[in-house]
Length: 183
Image 1 (cartoon, rainbow, N blue to C red):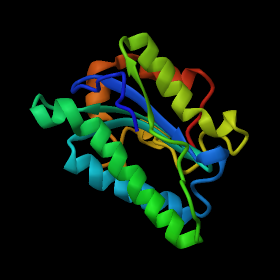
Image 2 (cartoon, rainbow, N blue to C red):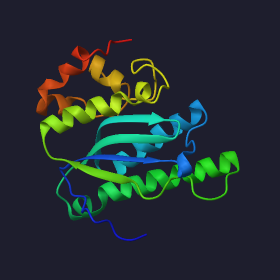
Image 3 (cartoon, rainbow, N blue to C red):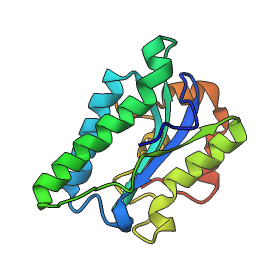
């Protein structure tokens, strides 16, 4: 693949996302989502990535991430390596489990930098509203988003970084005011 036009650097928020080839499903069963999250947690630790929001849907995923630190490896490769490994791992698993031939993902992941707090808040809403936007489920009942970690400020795993988010961006309370209710 050609090199990426946008250089992915540390301590920068990115909205990263990808979907299945031809908009096909990349998750068919609950175990597919669970394995993807398990691998996300594994690779996030390996590449020193902080995840601030995520949403997994049948044919695509969204994440709000940031590479931590200022090491050369981190600033040049962490975000790309994290997503490359995560997508490769899921593609191999998915192809084996469902006897699929050919690509699983549409191509290279997409990454958009987040430069200000206002866009960051909008992005958190956007990522967490994906289930209702795609008529899959209500936002608060879909189990494959990080919304519960924000509503209760107590993540159930090491996957998401809530505390660091609250320290930097106090205005997340608008999520509840915008109509989302806790379970």
